[in-house]
Every structure is written in structure tokens, then in C-alpha cells.
Length: 331
Image (cartoon, rainbow, N blue to C red; front, side):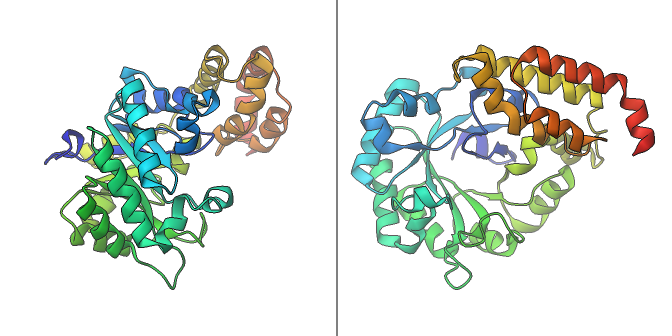
């Protein structure tokens, strides 16, 4: 039994999201209540080629534990070798296998959700990694390739037989991408079909959502992705709701801008993006996401489209907060 999934525990996972869940964002979500981190996915081949650009995606610090590194690929032996290298470098708490990514460039390489169409290959990949490393191995899947091939229950049973110790399931097919509704009935069927823990993922945006899925589906934890992008406070709110049955007050406008500034400064200081201007350009979409629900958010997003320095962001924040009462009255 994985310690973070032992009886009586119901962990909140931060879903791995390429270009989003970097080391800085994971640290912020950990502070706000996320229990388990999974890195952005990383190519097994990139790891084996000692690609420094690839290797940086495996970085984390001990404050982020419990943390796993997620791999994608389609060769069990090669992926096992890559997983061994990661364990030697960083000693993650677990290795996670990406069988769920719907992105074309990953699927085209026979990775991610494409393996849901080839169960023998999926089984071979999982078994290869399980045999290669001394740490637990988990997997993330979707419920199927499309509406006519929903095979998550079968896949979960196969993965359990290979020695996979927990499975996170996104309740959409690959064909859906991120459209439509997540099918939690299938997730519940999977949780009932295997003895290993199942983590549910899809359309979790509030503490009430978490409590509902815990109560109705038999999952052992939930994974939160897109809702955390603009609202990393969701983890804190969810824990409060699970404990007290009431919602926390949402973050204030001041708290939102405080986090925007802190996130941006940490991104610059991390040196991951090189110069300050490169870091700010990479942060533009993230800043725009943080504006969700704010009065005058359209104008804010227009300004964030062109932001190039921390000083500029500080000026925008100060100007917005000065005018916040006026914006609220207009809204």
C-alpha cells in the first residue's frame, strides 16, 4: 500500500500539465494544500539521450513530496532504463506512466493515450517499468480512445496485474480532449473492479465536487488539473469542505495579485526561462488565467498579452487595486 493512499487518507493530487505544473507552480499548490505532485510529462528517449532540456522537467525539491515523475513512450525496456536513471538522479516517491495524453505530437509517437488502443503494448510498457525500478509505479489513463472503445476497466485490470500500484483516470476519451463532461460512472466501475487505489480526475473545481466524488464513486483520491490553473486555492478550499462541509471565502483581489506577483518573481528567479523578458513572455497565459472572475478581466488580459517585466506587472497590479472599487461598482 502506498503511504499517501493508506486507509483513512484521501489525497488531493495536482494533475501533471505540460507547460503549467513546473517546479514553481507545484510549490505554490503544495503550500495551498495539494498532497501529491506529478511532474510535467517527460520523454523517456529524451532522458536516455541525456537531454538537459528534457531533464529539467524532472526537477523538484523535497518540500514538494509526495512527488512522482511522469514518463511517456512506447518501449517498456527503454522506458525502464529511463525510469532507473530518474530514480538514481532524484529519488522520486514514484514513477508515473502517461497513458492518457491526447496531444497529437505525443499520440503520433505511439505514446500517451494511443496505447489505450494497443493493450498488449500498454501492458509491456507498464511491466517493463515496474521491473526496472525499486520505487512504486503508477499510471494515468483516459477511459478509452473514443466513445466506441471505452475500455478503462479492462486496462485497469491489466495494469494491476503488471504490478502498477495506483491508477489515475481522467473521465474523458482521447477523442473528447477536454470537451464535454467527464464520465465518473466509468471511473466508479474501475474503482470497483480492481484492488489497487483509483484516483479520479475530471471536472473537479470545488470542495463540493471532491466530496461528491468521494461519496459516490469509491475513488481513493482526486486529481485536480485545469481548475487549479487559475485557482490554486482550490486545494485549500477542498480540504476545508471535506473537514467542515462548508466553503471557504474565495481569495480576495489583493490575494490574487499577490500570488500573480509571487509566481512571476519565482519564475524569473528560477532561471528556467533564461532572461526576465523570456520568463514574462512564458507567464503571460498564466497571468491571464489568474484573472478569471475578476471585474474588468478582459482589459487585464489585454495588458498581460504584452507584459515584459516584473516592474510592469507591479504597475498593473497597483493600478488595478487602486481602481478596484470602481470596477466592482461598474460590474
